[in-house]
Amino acid sequence: MNKITQPLLLSLKPYYADLVFEGRKKAELRRRIASGIEGRDVFIYVSSPVKQLRGGFRVGEVWRGSPEEVWNEVSELAGVDKRGFDKYYEGREIAYALQITEVWEYENPVDLNRLRKRFPNFAVPQSWRYVKPEEYRSFQKMKRPNRLASRIAG
Image (cartoon, rainbow, N blue to C red; front, side, top):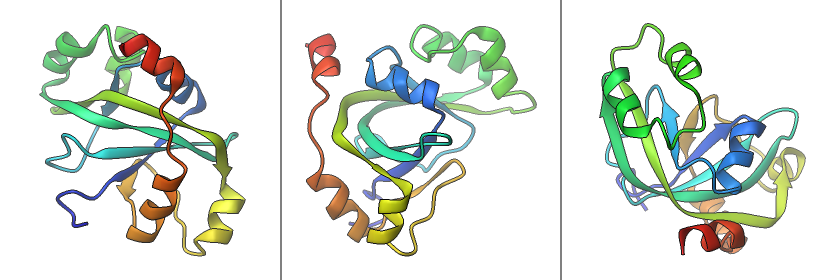
């Protein structure tokens, strides 16, 4: 595993994480992101007050452009209204959106205390970070398809 294929760990607010796992959010908005991430696994850490590693998704297409261009591509997929979108990208010239495909959810999400016991240097990302090889092996073992998302996609 190298930086070209290395999975990512994203922090999402509980509301947006719920939308992903319910199959109602199909694009994840980002102000910045690693390059060349199409086809990579992304693990979702749900931020406070939940504080859990809950599952993840595979990145399909990546949209990049002005906020207006990206809005035109993902307005029906992003789980936010135009006002929220504009506020998120205020002052930005470039916007990114990741297509969410192949969602999986852990049967038993892992809380932050357990993550830190298993990985003493576990760092919660402010936005995103690369997943370390030892984390990836552990995260992969817990993976299973999200039944709801699979029914929606199929």
